[in-house]
Image (tube, rainbow, N blue to C red):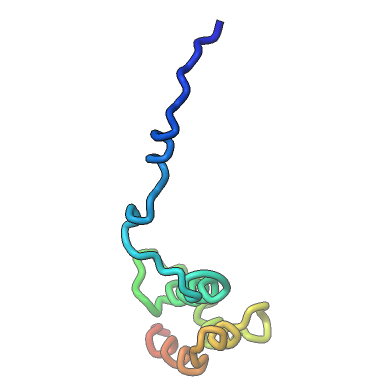
Length: 108
């Protein structure tokens, strides 16, 4: 015979829900933090990390660094599905300025 459990009062269940005041801080729900723009921004951010153009705790890998630099400088635009020029255009960044900054910050 299985034991019978007492029903859980609904007042206890309501207190288990997360209330808006329990968030750690204000949530940013702008267009820049969700959707395609957020995806493209993260892609660009990760490429900058892989290229060594921004500080990162992750170790650099020579092959991935070379590919990231080539993509960020536009050398792979004809060979990839998503060229850096398209990403920069969607984010409102000048691709030629980005390429110049990457060349200046990444040691040959």
